Picture 1 (cartoon, protein in one colour):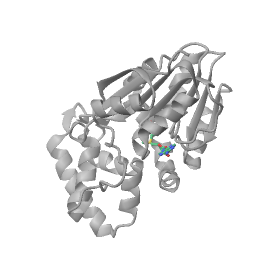
Picture 2: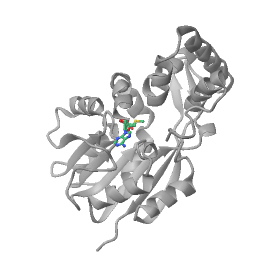
Picture 3: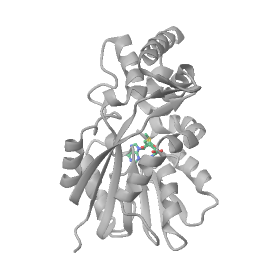
Length: 274
Ligand SMILES: C[S@@+](CC[C@H](N)C(=O)[O-])C[C@H]1O[C@@H](n2cnc3c(N)ncnc32)[C@H](O)[C@@H]1O
């Protein structure tokens, strides 16, 4: 798992500002869901290049702190470079299912597009709850349904259609594995949280052109990057052409850009007070 994400760390570093811009409004709602404010100690799980945690650092003031953590050490290295100037932000390498921290250490735990990649999602929420203080808040962002996220779904479809099997395979926890509000609600409740709420936020995805969209997405999506890297160039080209044709059908023009629909879920809750 960490090897796969390490391999796309350079792509994430190059696109970090783009990803943070694309998700800026939804990230503010994530931080609202986790109730993050002045003086809070915050843990960002599966933080990748750290965009959500860095946004949290903007809220916690001089007396708060933020830990950016990820299972992939090269992602954490990217996060560390981005956080270098801020003494309130530190980094750590660990799996979200086995957090290296004492019980009750944080006021808030957040995860932006990380929870859906772990096999035992309720177990991961339970582990996050362990490191929260009583009444501490948890919020996770996941992608909404595949058909509401054609900017990613179409690329995965193009790979699947090439080989006549779904991609990623059903056995793999892919980006859409927590795309349903009821399922996300159940995961947070089963993880031991109270006051669980799930909201849907639109996150349209912009690109300079269809070609620019096709070139960016596979560099970010871990399983997809690995699959494409292992293919013959002519097969990759067929997949690219299929994705570009499908993209042309659904992307709309807005000035000198193209726009795809996008949608995320934000699930939040808190640990019991005592
Ligand atoms: C789609 S990226 C999201 C990165 C970042 N949170 C963001 O929104 O910019 C998913 C991240 O989850 C991390 N990840 C996947 N499985 C993990 C696990 N079991 N524990 C911790 N991190 C994990 C990957 O290394 C990767 O950095």
